[in-house]
Amino acid sequence: MKQGDLVVRKSYGSDVLFRIEAVRSETALLKGTDYRLLADAPIPDLSVVRDPESTRAAQQARIKVNESLRKMHTDREKQTAETVDAIRQGLQTPDAAYFEMPGKVLHLDGDGNYLKKSMQLYSTMQVPAYGLHLHEAQMSDMLYRLLPQVRPDIVVITGHDGVLKHRAPNELYSLTNYKNSQNFVNAVRVAREYEKNRDNLVVVAGACQSHFEALLHAGANFASSPGRILIHALDPVYIAIKASFTSIRETINLPDVIHGTISGIDGVGGIETLGRHRVGLPKPKAAASTMANVTMNA
Image (tube, rainbow, N blue to C red; front, top):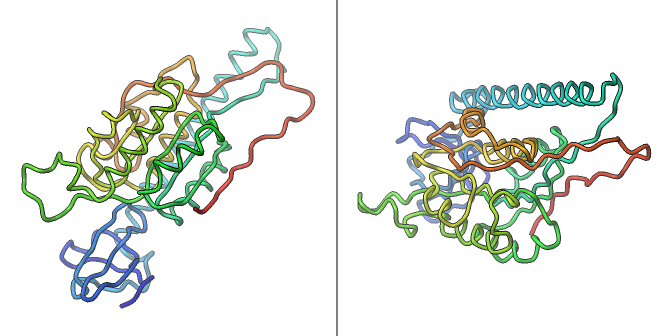
């Protein structure tokens, strides 16, 4: 058993597919392939997976992802149709052309593979996004530099997390019992120091089992995980896209956005927040250059 192997934990009923990040004596450091979970396990408890697509965990994750993507596309098509109808009725012309300014996303991710998948989804949905892969502990310092440069409308702060196994029952709400929640809290505080108004800068933060309450208290608009459960790698991205395409005249529909995520209400939660999408008239005759989605590694 070596670094890079795909494995499941026998003691957990092989419920989550992991990739081995490192092997330390008789223990392996694991990162979820579909869920933003950081864990460790004894080598004897692990079973190597040769065909990941055949596992129950991968199949269930794929079904949930497809459902979420379908809803995302359906919502976008509905929004476009409503915008066209409103403009035609307002201007009393059938062919008035408009342009859109979706909210710009700055996405910091502790996992390079997840970042690639996230940037692909932003690109597919035509959301302007700037992505950076770096360790969770570096995120707060990096935000000091990036926020004035990128000037995003939405910040995603995510990666890997998890509740420590060996803790007292009454210590669930102590940040010291989480693998990366303190790092996420530090980054959220930096974002909120840069922009105090939660409608001007939408902050989405957290990963699997993250300290939901601490992240909201630090200034996040949306965070994981109210039920301390696993969240899918694309859940923060779904919320960011929803914020990017919700009109600045409307609040992001909380039940709708939570229902659209893969992990649901135990996985993510948040507060009422205005969207960051703008519509403009008339459409410029000269095609303006749009911001290309950028991915970088720290």
